[in-house]
Length: 442
Ligand code: ADP
Ligand code: ASP
Ligand code: MG
Image (cartoon, rainbow, N blue to C red):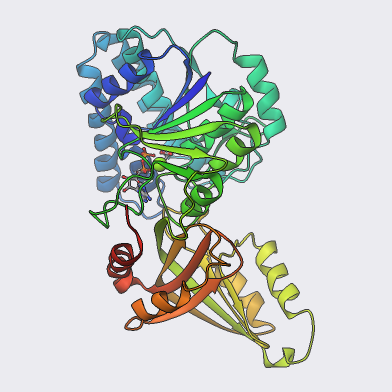
């Protein structure tokens, strides 16, 4: 059995939907299809949830969403039925906007409309292309905790529910990104979460393969939008691909590979507009193991430096610091320490899968025992590869290559699969292009 996930651009227009439907139709083992919202829709929904929205903006965003979906529907055979269905959802969405300010629960419900609308249309497009798929409400299966906006899946419940709602031999179409908590409230798995959903589904149904169909022909050596010379990687290990996605390779949501590894599911990433290209196979053990395979970049990073002279020759400073951060659900990426100070980086990017909010409350708590400096507009660059902690001769050329740049923090040695550093926002893309040219060969 194959679980196939199609991202926003793969279902963003009727042509894209048709190409994706053809892919599904080409192999009868593709029996669980997971799709995202049409591209741009989740961004519009997020914008709609902003507290500061005026009514002109609101109508504009709603009009975008309506237009995008109607353009697809108008070209479908079954357009009258689809239109009725769409306007039922659309007026629910409109009514829902009045509640969004009340609490976090309503935002997730609002965001879920994107995937609910796209799946209602795509199920018809699949039918028109000879695939009789049953529409499955992902919230019946994708059980999560109640951390709205970034819910944690409860995989035992997911497995149980999958057994109940997914029968072997049938084909299903469902939504990525959305789930529900034990009270039945709609939850979401964080931006870009459809990949993660698909992987959880693949694990739950015991699939052999998970396919991630997107707008690029696989996992590239770096984001091809930044480096035109980047090229697709034929085969990469789970460990490397996981690091790449955690450190900003948007092609996969950072948590995607965990369920696949647990379930022994093979993963393939490929382009829905170029399906004959093999794409990337993510495997347990890759045949080639270059020291540097890829580079990833994460923008909008924050550097927090915490300094406490009182802590000189005292113990418990780090424990105390991390306790405050943990209590405030702040996840930390890189850490560098000296006797009395600690520098750490936080992912504060707007569309981050695990976006961190450094609130005044947290800063206040930290300032009770330390001096705190916050620096923004930084970027995190990560070199991804193999045995990096043991590869000699890596540091020299790298430091030489970076000698004209202002490197703020370096982490090397903790992971065999990455070496990363923090750099000014404005220099980041240039640095990635330069490093790609110097260190990555086909
Ligand atoms: P989807 O909507 O299909 O989930 P995304 O936009 O989330 O697609 O992810 C695909 C995009 O990820 C690509 O268009 C590319 O710009 C970006 N990307 C970043 N890093 C990489 C990488 N290393 N390999 C491939 N794509 C990458
Ligand atoms: N539609 C959601 C988003 O844009 C989930 C996804 O596309 O993976 O974040
Ligand atoms: Mg994505």
